[in-house]
Image 1 (cartoon, rainbow, N blue to C red):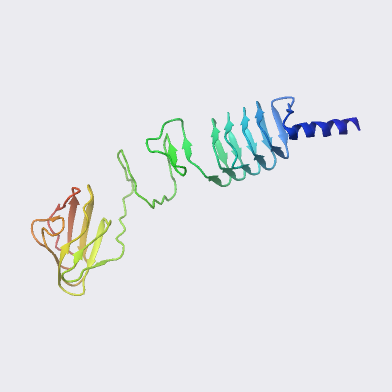
Image 2: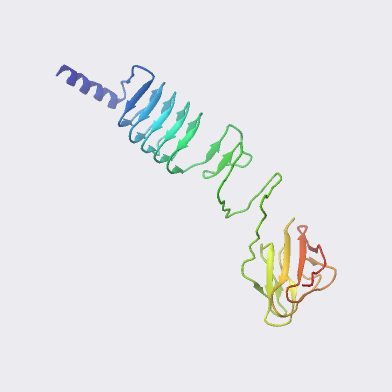
Length: 257
């Protein structure tokens, strides 16, 4: 009975935030830990189920959680001095710092920025950005919906595919606008003449080819086109243009195929 009363008193003090649990030895194993106030653990912490923290939490050793780690919106900081191992889902809505390795067996949900390493990003992180100081390796496919900016050399080991998209239909007296394509397929319903209308962009290259059984003539010096003369493309003829940011310059003679 005395032990039961003492346990009840300790539980009340813990919930009130005025008591600390200290385990004998470097490791404490628990089925459920729910901390309403600050928690500081100098050794390892192993949780067999979920871990929920509504305020600050600091672990001096490893944090090994079989279930889910969830941090509420009021969390100001979480610091793991060693390794973070999560078998379930890791959800962080504020800052989580792991000095050692981070191993997650399921999903990682990050509401804010992701930073790997102790370097300084050159691009401002605005809440949903990622910074990796070292090497970033992807063994599978990577899809970029925006622009890729490379400050160093880009090495492609197995070739690069340029999507042509739908063919651009040219009307007689119209304009040739390839948008942002690198390979631009042209077609027409008959023999047509057109002006150049694709906006210039510094360093861009366009490969034009005509897939129609008709001749397409693009008038020189129209729009930003600077060629050796009018570009006359019969079926399967091709030509390469390069932009200096102001003009599109013919880089090679028309290839008659």
